[in-house]
Length: 481
Image (cartoon, rainbow, N blue to C red):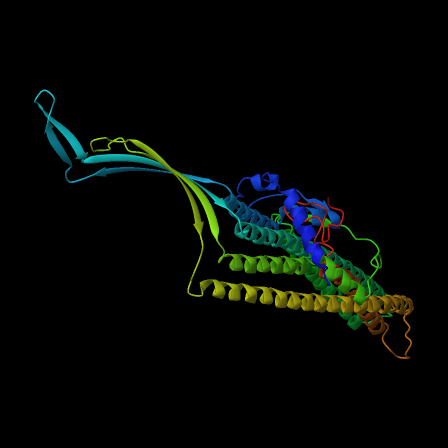
């Protein structure tokens, strides 16, 4: 299980990384909406290793950009909540015209009438109000903390997206390698069929063969040519998927490289894999952040029935003041204490809702952990199965290659294991068995690589790369200061 202080360390690291400044990744201009693939484009060919493909996808991924925007939005909510600590200043300017004004006339010192306006027909006023909240019960602080945990969840969502992007790239890359390997098998079968056709034609010219054998060999060549065409088309389809995952123009030619020893790397036991995943999967860490945010929601609801204090200062300027002793400027200072006495049960209902939210997030964490355990079990069993299949298919391929070699020798000598049998039929059967063994070995090889990639993703090994922006650098962050 995740220790309770883990999410506190995540919170501290996120707060430290974004203190007092706007992150540079949040200052980038808005993204263009032009499509990635442009009709008639001729992009340069790319030669990519698996690591190159992963790095390119992480730079180009649109889903990661969306996740980064989610982090920016969550950070904005934090800034909005923190703004409640600061004073506010508002200005209000009004102009009023009445249907008529009122005045009073008195005889002046010299006997002339003197008019004093009581209410002017045109009235202007300017007011400035400054207010400062005093968070004596921590209500603002609870709201800020809740928004900060929501920000941590948004950052972990970026890590979750990164984890999935890397898996998608690896699967697409392995599919291209698989398709290219099938092309090699199909081309070898085609060459073998052409060799058999040449031998059958030579036997026919020498008078030791039959026209039927030549026709059969020609049919096998035609079928092998169709298989080569289909195999090459699968390469094109797999390359199109890889281009899409890499966010490259669909017209971009890609050359991939083999990934090395398929047996490299250690496979955890199931229990070790689950234990590691409970510490590293972003979805589980997200659940912890959601729980803490919901708990802050309970605190916020409970403190809504406590007293609140605020200070205010009001300045008024009325140049059109009337009366016998008009005063054009005035100000007033206020100290306000508000104590809820009876709110008809609203606060109790809010607390009830907030506690239900806490229980819901805790249940959701259990569901998430169960789902992660299931993913790991499935991926782990797939790794074990693919490894066993690879061992079997490697041995079967060796046997099929030797079987074909012997059948080829007998075909050239015009003899068979079965008296009266057809040498061409025997070598055709051997070719079919060899092709199937090669296909099985290729499938087992790349099924193993796909399964290992899925297992790594299920554990969460692709989620963190040590970079704090915009996601989190690591799952536990025990070394952060």
